[in-house]
Length: 556
Image (cartoon, rainbow, N blue to C red):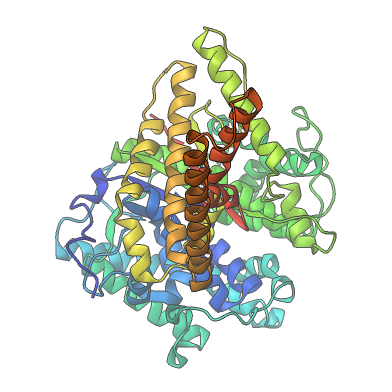
């Protein structure tokens, strides 16, 4: 049984470090469910949650992600606890942003009693089940039904974004952990959604998850929503940039024409409505094109899905900074990027993701060492009082702007899906994980630091994550690998023994007088015999595999 004391969470989650995950949006969960299949989607979902909890004490989610996210509903509190290696009676490391009841003071608030928790939980349930709410959990099952089957126009629009995903990739037959299997009694879609919401509402009432007011994000009319986080600059493909620019120009007008208040906080539902319309009709000709070329054609479904995820990154960045103001504690946002070679067999979905930078090729050894050389050069020049701008200084993974980016080795991300719950808890409570968190906190806490200090702290954080990756690899060593290690150790022992014999013979004068070349030869033999081949091989094998995670750190 898992040691509950060792797994105990901080008593005050609103004073602890938090991380949000862009890929846990309710529509992202629905798209993964359609594209990967239920079991693979749940497996990927747990992997992302595990990865996020390595970097912070709590994962921050909002009400819609929890009560309308098909993966959260399918797992339920007990299934999630099993996946994380926690006992069923222990609190879950989730901090849920909620719409507060009427009369709640502005700013940070949380329910202080069992009665208030019940009131908050009931309000969240009623909001996701009210008439007019566009449910991603319902749409994921309705997109296979005839158009007349959908009960609301919003569901039809959302189902339109999910069309075609089920045909791109099916379950691959791999064995998945038990928590990825949905009980037969809950496989009916309506039953799965209803029982999932029942379980999570009880978890809210029993304080297994912690509730707080959700942060108020800026309006899409405000420049701060689009400009403060460098997301347009992250795009490199001209078509993706044109689509993003068009979305920015069109969205405020779309909200106003739809009868909404443009000055209210940004909502993903507005973007879903606009993109589904854009898949059928081209943008109006009177859009302001003063900031650059716009995209005048109808969108394909993959383009619309990528544009929605791009908007979600903006939304999560804005919410992260508002959450920082509410909680006044370490706050970050994590997103995941697929890594795959372009072998010419990609479907339209993957090709579009490449255009938007959501699927990237693996980094070659040459690129890796060139980046390290550039970093060392900038560090040396910074120490001399000079500063050379980096390509990523204001974009993804850079040091500038209002948030610092940190790319985490892809092997850690992938290992989160292969570790058993017990192994994951060993990693989560290990001092190396605490060291990686501490390095990350130091990076996010830098204020107007010298460039050399910024580079040093970022390097320390990256090295801490690399050490953690090597530690995680120990859990995956199979018997064959152990035989290789033992065999390598025996060979090294034999080589050192032979070297010691020849050095003794040399000291006894068996090989005549010393010469320069003889000394070079003995030095080379000693080096080759003692070189840590297996350890260096492990380091060279550390490279992004199929998915890389990016942590974006908020600063006040």
